[in-house]
Length: 347
Image (cartoon, rainbow, N blue to C red; front, side, top):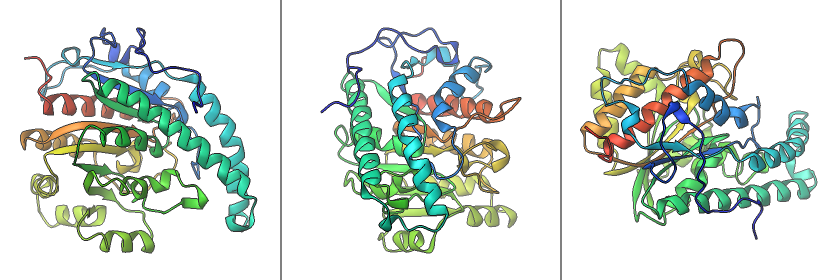
């Protein structure tokens, strides 16, 4: 059963990300935009993330002292699938009322199951569409990434990668653990991403950094994972910094916990909240932009291979759109890092 009208053939048009002039056929790195925000539990807006990042990318100065100009990376963003956005908006109407009822103290177990069944089934079909789209490009030898949208969109790409790689690790940058079994009853909630990822045996380890907002139950999942989940808490990283331990030392510990092949899952709220004030669930504290860039540089220098990535939960702000500027620049850094790790940068 197909939920959407678009097909998986390779389109010839693309969004002009970073003003690069690379066709989809020529591109080695494909960005799939996923305008989806069905289960967001607080502020909405992240479905506009791909469009927001695309527009802001036109303003970037593309020279990087770490890597060559991005024109030397064959990167292309697929056209934004408006049918995904329309369906997301339609389903969001149902979930908004449902979540409001929860906020009033009504238990989801006492509400009609039809809403949950509808949301869960449609989200699964959406993820299958995204997975198939990703596989289409992976099978053509492309590196594939996804830009959301709420963070659950990453699951479709990760599932696709499990059909190409027998084992890999995940570097998860997030303020939240996303280890809820089915947050608010949604099997595919943004707060349940890692719970779903850990069902995939090909994901051998998940290394989380930036974590600073999680529950006792999620902490128990981490503690009982027998080392499959390795967490570098924000409090721990900051305490080490205050005690004089360099960020370089911390980065080496993070990298040592990762296998050779890694997937980077990046929630924008892993950054300091001042850098992403419009994201759905901002949390005080967090990583600095330069700290993340340095970590990525260390990943490449250590010989790690980035096999894919996502960037999620960017929402448009007001007036001067800091969220969009930070989001587009982080996408740029993720693309550079991935290409450099795969030796696809031209010298």
